[in-house]
Length: 198
Image (cartoon, rainbow, N blue to C red; front, top):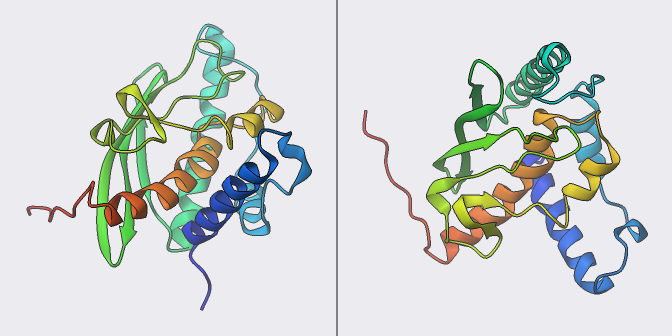
């Protein structure tokens, strides 16, 4: 039986965290940042070409088309791998994104609202993904429910501007964060399962 993709993220995220603690602040380049499963996932997400942010009127439209194409491909790949875990939509300008993400733990589906704004300096600055209903429930979160991606994701993003986009932020940022933090919060009984009303 093949290991679910989110498990690979969880293992990779924990290994990076442990290695980071061993290095005690030294450069992250001394160890393998991305495992083979994550490389495979990434290789199936199209890279973006246009270096444009919301202030670049015509170029932003081109970048937005590339973002949607990459997101659609990533969601299709996830569905084919039976690893569908989020839905996103944006406002008309493509500057505000919102939707749902979920994590299945012990056959129970934990669903959360997800939202983020595209920074003015995008794509040089990664979006800050927020799960507002989890605000204050874990140390790996900033005010407003913004998840902490500083140590693991942002250095990788900075090295891959403008090739990385929203799909990459979901795959390398939110996915691993959910895989590590949600089971921990469930174990500490910080979050509990709530059955959906039909």
